[in-house]
Structure formats: C-alpha cells, structure tokens
Length: 160
Image (tube, rainbow, N blue to C red; front, side, top):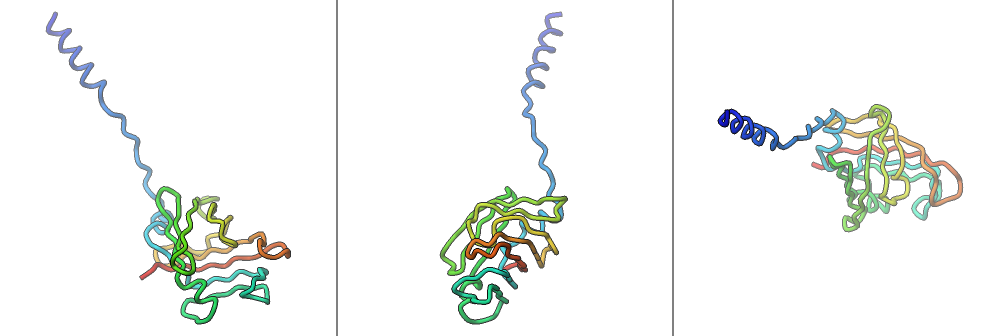
C-alpha cells in the first residue's frame, strides 16, 4: 500500500509539472505575402493633396522616373512584421518610421497607424496582395491642404 501511494504521488508530481504550450496560429496567405519581403514603391498617387512638389493637387511617382519626386520616393522602403508592427525607411534613406498594421474585413482592407506620414496612416482597400505585388487604394483626409478628401493609390513590389 505504501508503494502504491508513493507511485501515485510521484506520477502526480511528474504529470502536474508539464508546461502548457500555447498553440501558434498559422499565418494566412495574406500574412505570409505581406511579411515575406521588404517592399518598395513601384507606383504612388495621392490626389487632391497640394504641396510644394505639386501645384496641381496630385502627387504621382513611378519607379524609375527622375526629378524631385524620384528623390522623394525612390529610396522609401517598408517592412511589415509578423507581430503586426512595421518599419519604414523614408525618402532620403536615412529617416526611419515605425507603426502598426492590421488586416480588416476578412483581409480585404489594411489599417496602418502610428507612422505620422501624410497619406499613409489609415485604412486602405487591398486591391491585390501576393508575393510579387501589393496594391492598396483608399481615401485619406487631407493634412496639407484644406480641400477635404484625398485618394491614395499605392503599388508596392519586393526589393530585389
């Protein structure tokens, strides 16, 4: 009887000391795509957004173009991390920004917050997202001028 009690006590101690492991949620296809690369701007357009760079109210950049806008966008990079934070390198390649991101509406939208970059923070529709392309589109509240809404169209590609 003493042996049985001792065996039960040892088993109780052995099995009660197991560490509880929290299961890791597998990444969705969109989470895998967005976190797999560092992204650069292929095409950027912000309408109704007057700045010293644009008297027309539109800012438009295509990768490979030259001029003031090219200097402002060609070195920009963004990295979306699995912990839902992001880090970005600004236009000159020396300024850095951070923020958070999340998917909304069954991953048909993305929300970016905390970068304090005009035209970046807020919700955007995900037009396309895969390992080779991310296309976002959304309305923005104008922060440089007083004309109301701006519209953002952004195409990102992985840095090669």
